[in-house]
Image (tube, rainbow, N blue to C red; front, side, top):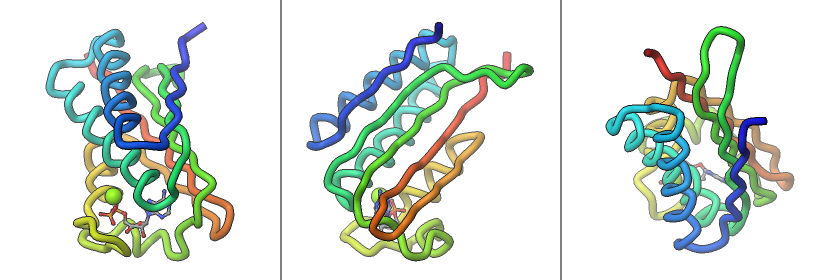
Length: 134
Ligand SMILES: Nc1ncnc2c1ncn2[C@@H]1O[C@H](COP(=O)(O)OP(=O)(O)O)[C@@H](O)[C@H]1O
Ligand SMILES: [Mg+2]
């Protein structure tokens, strides 16, 4: 069984923890130093969104296979207010807070797969994957 790492996100220190755990798993899976940093950056942004926009949530890290490729999967879930217009939220520079509005679109660019599902009043789930090509 591939290991699954769950990190509860409720304070800034949890963002650092999720980032470090993601980096460590990426290293174990054989990603390069640069890829490790890219993965850690995307995890930070998505975890920060949980703190800033949803208050608390969870990051789940695991290895992922699709039959052809393998890589790392990061799931971020929260039961915060949700996002009324996901397309708008995915645009560069769009922020409802004090941020730069680059967290979601930037993370999408850093990863190979990026999916976001959000329900107003229900919460948000982000699934990101990066494949190992070697
Ligand atoms: N987990 C979340 N729950 C609720 N709203 C979110 C969440 N993540 C992102 N958002 C919304 O999407 C917008 C864009 O997110 P992002 O690109 O990370 O920019 P920023 O965090 O700098 O505002 C946020 O301003 C917020 O309105
Ligand atoms: Mg953000």
